[in-house]
Image (cartoon, rainbow, N blue to C red):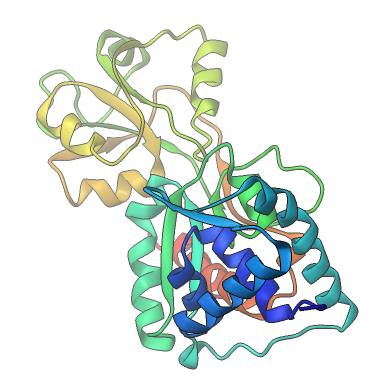
Length: 302
């Protein structure tokens, strides 16, 4: 026990990220028994339980929390020093990727990515989480592989790639009694509105434009996501501003219509983001390239 095995360190890092021995084993391509043995050896080596089973999974002890940044740095430096380039074969991989996205991308883009993966890499699994204030930190630690959305305030150490650019549209019920194929500024302001506040969508841009133009909407409903907004619009007389690609998708699913906003609204770029630590990781490189190809094709549709 005088020396640490690199495989043990990899197991430690994945358990810390996933709060699960079984999921750590899956991500590393190990048998669960192998991961458990590695954890037991780590416990003996450090003289600490390291992880305790709770209702939220295997949670780190204070000793493990203190060790994590040090051990993570060691493994990263070793990989850099030896020019680590693990081969990644998509068709043979059973790797699980974690992607942080907006609920808009979940509606509009996720099905296309899944259908593509089923054809070229059927063993790959995805775990999706909502993009949020902690996404940058989770990219840095490797708890997520990619973040797709609008993240304008990332600091040094992050890479980004534009996937597509989109603007905003207004949605109204198809049989709205007062709104036809166009909506004037006055008519827009007379109606009640839904406002959606969610991370990664650039939706605060809309608020700034309306404020600058002296337009105060009558906000009847505030929502934390776009997931149910089309159905609400179809069943009420409320209006809502949404990104265009989402609007175009929802028009085919609900009894709603798509209108140009009464004042010009700026466009914004949807990007994928990743951390420098994983820039050369073969699996991450493949995932980024796949998403870029799929989403750039999507952006050209319509």
